[in-house]
Image (cartoon, rainbow, N blue to C red; front, side, top):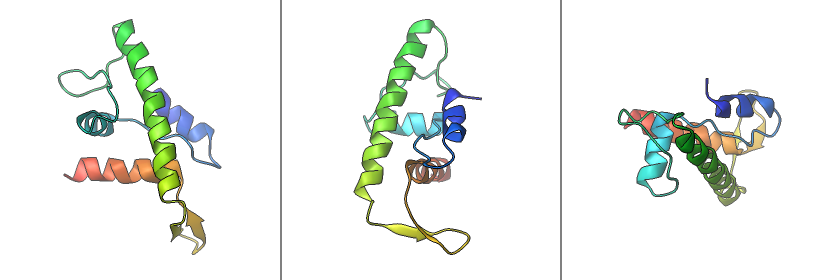
Length: 104
């Protein structure tokens, strides 16, 4: 399990943190939003240590990007499963990006 998964579930109220996976990382790199260090099979590199440091910094770039994208849609809302209108959170942007990258 990636550290980003732990971050996501440590913030159950505001949902500020997105999970990064190989599909999202590859897409963000291709769009020149991030520069994650990826293996040939597109998995996020943990080793060598230099790759890990790069990816930690790139997660911060991704996190900041999620926050900006959330601000861009701050006037939009959706109805949750209980029928309550809610604003979009960074995790909603991350989920949409994951869906987009896995359905192409």
